[in-house]
Length: 295
Length: 295
Image (cartoon, rainbow over all chains, first blue to last red; front, top):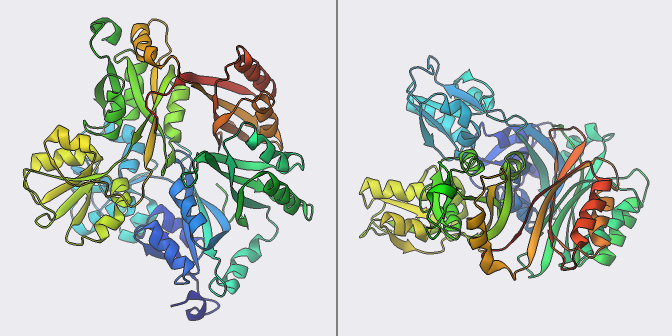
């Protein structure tokens, strides 16, 4: 099936995400169109590359957890490009069936990372036994299906709405500023990406600044990064992210991810990339895109 | 209690790690001394800062999952320094009680990330129901305590040894090159860090090259990173890692982590740091250290 042919021009396009309904990724997908859940990131990438969905909303980094290398690897390996970015604030809530209370409950379910992020809240409530589960929204689903006020879940408010649960406590994480950055990606294959859908998504964002995300490799040689960054610095092109990692495909090479703000001067960014190609072995532009919703 | 005073000179010193016995972190801790488990990273950092243990082995980054920002934050905030680094290869195994088989089993337990990393192996065995748990080694413990051949766990071979389980399958992850980098940290408080223990740890590594890990902040201004990296490039000091992240403490600033190889020329690295301080707002050296065990 092809999302381009099956959708009416005015109906929201399908947006793949990894997880259950109510997941933080679903909140990102809903900013773009109609969320379509997939069990794994690989399945979401396959779906968008092959045109089963118009877009996918993929987490690239989290302010506490860091860059998700696995998803950068998928963006590099699948025939896709980044067409927008968006941010979702991770706000963990304690959820229970209507009538459930903190006093009556015996178990609290969530993904181990969410449980760890709420460690102070949980430490102050030793009557709650902690149970790990596959994901945050999935925990809300289990609580709904259990039908029991003994079980609570830590998940998003969206998960509470989706599964008909009450929010017993809000913002229970120990640390604030837990924000996830998502890439909205589309197929780069000819005749697969939904051009109309993309125009509709981007039209209201035409005046916003745009970012470009690049991957490039450098030999493990003193000063090679400095020479590569000169391509941007000497043209006053500002970077907003840089990250290195050892490139496992070729020993003694490093893979870099760089985001830069697209300069207003016409042709400047093309000349910066030409310069970068002179001093690097491999450069790939993963996308040039605006921001849907700032953090 | 103070590890420095309670240990005999020849007995292995205590090394804090997060997780259960058999965790990948315990493998790292064992390279340094006698592993001491803690439930959370924060508790492990407290233990080492206050001298309850001589060292802690803390994961900083993983080749698939990326940098663990949370632990860099702890290294910055606690009075600790990095005294060595080490690498542990993550090799997921399928474990069961003696006599258990893949055919008879009904459930497989592990941390969601380990389950996701073994997705192809599990997809080919639909008879196994997947159950999320708090950590990999904890899953092995649950299987041991269940006493049932219906339950299997995905964890390290060290967990199999610790809990008396059989290894039913080895290297079941979909992707190779899953390596975690650990920092060995010690208290930076006067009279708390174990100086004798540190000397014994580092003596056999005296001839190895050393790395320095830095954190510094830069204003969000075009070219500021280029100017900062000049401090290294103009002196032929090679970087092995660079990573940026928005610095939440101060808006419009970026926090950078940089690793560089200590140059042999005496005084060169001090001059590079002096130069760096001229063009940055905040610089902190997190440690200068050798590698215990390469990847």
